[in-house]
Length: 187
Image (tube, rainbow, N blue to C red):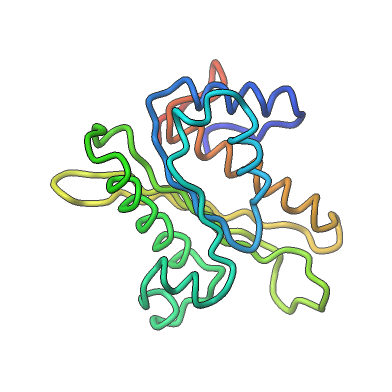
């Protein structure tokens, strides 16, 4: 990731405003965590220039409808790189559908699938897989993946969601070319 996550609300708002100032159009899907990024994106003026649609496929059936049978049938769990990338690719297809006249370099699909603090013991790590899909070549898709690992017991559910959402916003900013001044951008 080229841009550090924002560390306070004013920085977060400024980051989202920079995203909205780009020509980027996106469809975002989040499941299991990262949902604070939705509020962040929609809570800053200009969201209608950026956000085409937000999906929260929380139920297993809903997630499978978004991604198709691929990731889980291939042995990947719901919280995996394969699932995040399949979600992002599906979001890109949806973005192309919703904005058919947009230039290829303006549309992206963004996804987050996470395993965070829950009300029962979690055997695996607390983590999130983030992905961005963008058009490449003649009908191809370029995928960018990021793993966010969280230390068990350090944060509560809201804190873990905030950490994942901040990483997701930073990834979106980088993909949109809206990284903080002086930082590299444009995944």
